[in-house]
Image (cartoon, rainbow, N blue to C red):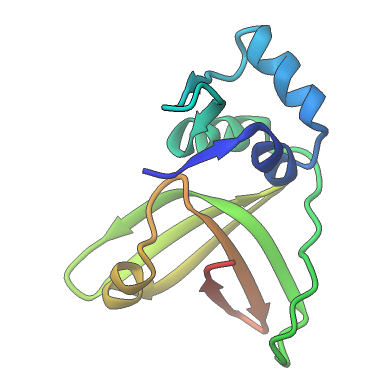
Length: 132
């Protein structure tokens, strides 16, 4: 399961690192210490917090991969439901909840699971997910 630094969590939630520290110190967001003593947030815990908070904005960083898709949302996976062939992936990006239907194979190849950071790219009625 991925874990996130205070800065990474702040970026995903659209707030400052100091805000994340205050939430942690106030008991609103659970943190642990990693092997080197740094404070980290479990990916699943962060996904749950982001889903509950459901507010804020997170801009998508510019990348140099040419694409015709203009609507991109960086977010955190908050749910994955998989059956024999298809899968449903839920993403929280700031105040936006996105749901993508993809193949089971895509979920496995990308390693999609609750707490993973992804970029959802939306064109028309299709949502494409890729790793940052």
